[in-house]
Length: 382
Image 1 (tube, rainbow, N blue to C red):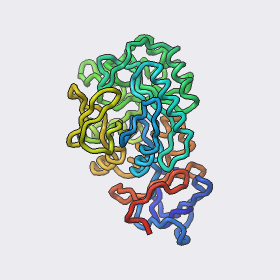
Image 2: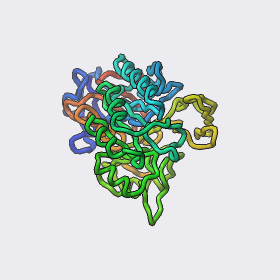
Image 3: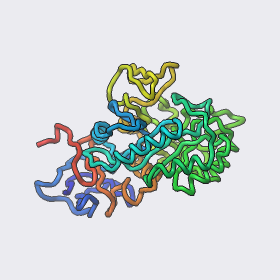
């Protein structure tokens, strides 16, 4: 399979080039001169970019990734139609036994063949977070210990794993070190930690910040806290929800200017209500109400996003951020977070053919996962 006549975002230098993208055995085989056969996908006037990877996604279209026995196929197909070729199902803060059950289900679903997005890892958003900055979650009253971290790491069964942790929790530094030893990438979040506590956590091995600004102690000019640490420390990559509900446009610009495209990971933080429209939904035993595209829990707090990463990427495009930089934030950086940058996340020879064909407004025309076409817009069908 080849994609001809498009502007291809070449991964080695992150530049758009006029080239035919050649695919063989599910991987990118070559960049060659334009031209080709009728069997090729014709991308005339279109852009060819790596598929997005969502590393913070709780579910979509009535599928909940934290359930112990849930079929993900509907969500995987919907995500693929949104240009998302890979996802790390995200499990909310729950008792350890319930998290382990959800982890087993993620592993089962990862092993299934699908015509949708690949499961590339998992993200545990807790359970070791602040009880005071828990957002819409209800974290269990359990101690944060290295032993518990190792237990959850083992339950991941070798899938790449991210874990959100509040650095002010008891034994947090030892827990972060244990996570690092197990190959788990720690993300600081749901926290009211001081600047000093966060810097100690980063020294111990934390490398990310979970949905920066959200569920964090606000920035204060005499004690900048967690935001001061994660926004100024170049060792930290910040997750950013770009639905214009969790963060407004001015804050998106601030984060972009401060961290730059190399240190931002675009996420959705979507839930099972994503893609379903306004209405009432049950999530983890709690009622969620979606009105005018905003999801609130029964206490009136924002409780996840109702849109995919694609909507956020389009918002960034409207703010004037170049498509090639959005691709870094939406594909390469998430792959790097999961430790799979050598396998996917950019269009380079030998990497998986996880590909999106779109126009200049990021309207999706076709999506390929491992070189197989899993979505094609109706207007592009022949």
